[in-house]
Image 1 (tube, rainbow, N blue to C red):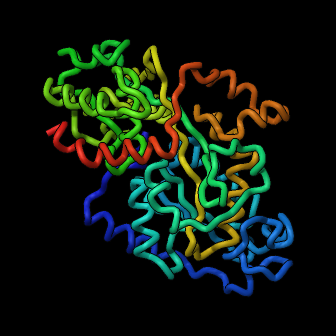
Image 2 (image 1 turned 135 degrees about the horizontal axis):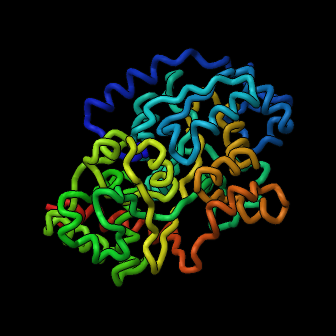
Length: 377
């Protein structure tokens, strides 16, 4: 597991800006127009550029794509990037993999007009909904495969994958948790971490939302989740450390709330520890991440081709192979293009699975901003 959504220090933001500005220059605008003569930066579909072949040609003329906040082990992004580079004559510059969703937006704003600015985003819903002015509308060719409530009607953002919120734990250090109440016990003293600051990081916010669903709250009322983490802190069980592969391998963070695909991936890099993943009985929580194009993308054609690739069968099946449920899963099952072995390994989502709506996400974010710091002291 890599903490993709952590809250970095101010110094890290400075390093982020310096690192991204080192990318090479993008192609001239005249090289990125499709066969139709349309500027890629204004294209809202591949058809606007003259079709997929024209989009590919324009993207390969640019030759580069800047991505941000995509750790190799997060939802299989290492293999997805490799597959994109193998398919197209485009180099992917993957910078600052460990920053939060909020910091993705900050990087785009700080680097506006520079060749090293991010072209595309992979964001938690709360940050995506709060920053739609930063996104360029675009609808992929598989747009109709995606449910209406899983995408913005104007194409500014679209869901890409989800997992289930889970508890990862070192089975040699703690007993298997079977309920939230277990985690309040002495066996978990100083041992329970979440993936970042829930006022900034999507995975951490989802941990609080899931605790609410498990402890008498609802998608409309996440206060019980905040209260639960307050109880963890009062009991001395909450550990204010962002988990990483190193903290898991060293035993520093023996219990971690995170997405199932991250906790499953952590087992392979746990330094010999018996790392297991538990999805507690009761209501499960899913929360999609969002794909979006930077409105100021220095490689606008490559950014749009990346969206097409992410929403195609290859990348969607690679998400699934990592234990994440791709947004086009139902359509791929119906079409017979799903990786059935991967689907069998992951299993079906629990029937009692909640996905917060846009409005519920915004309300939960506002409550966390107001109450989180006081709750955990």
